[in-house]
Length: 173
Image (cartoon, rainbow, N blue to C red; front, top):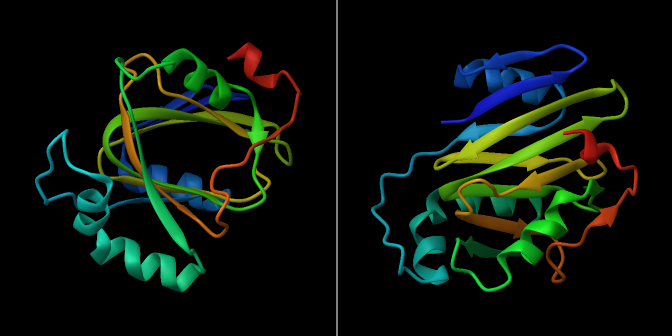
């Protein structure tokens, strides 16, 4: 279950999924919770995982023009885990929406919405779906658990490409 923390300018915590969805949607960030009734094992392949969620993923991709999907699966024993973590920790934007569906584990999205000066973070866990609009300043942390298994979808063959803002905003959080 997701957990939203408003950091700046107001401090507040929101745990109710419908309230989180409303807050995020008002800011152009799509947040939903998808059913995860298909049992999966840690050893399941990318193909098995994508097939398990085809009923949600396929229509979403077709409706929104996405051409490919993959699975990111990182954990404490992943080689170079700190280097992987570091590339997500700096504030950045993307030229396309950043779409993630959390199959297992957890990760924290931090948002710095320049149009409103808001800073907030959203803990995403199993069953959480998020689409960060292109151009939205954000960063991501997979600590402290260092376990994220998520489906990513893209409109371009290049996949995940960050445009680092170099604002340093993430340093205060």
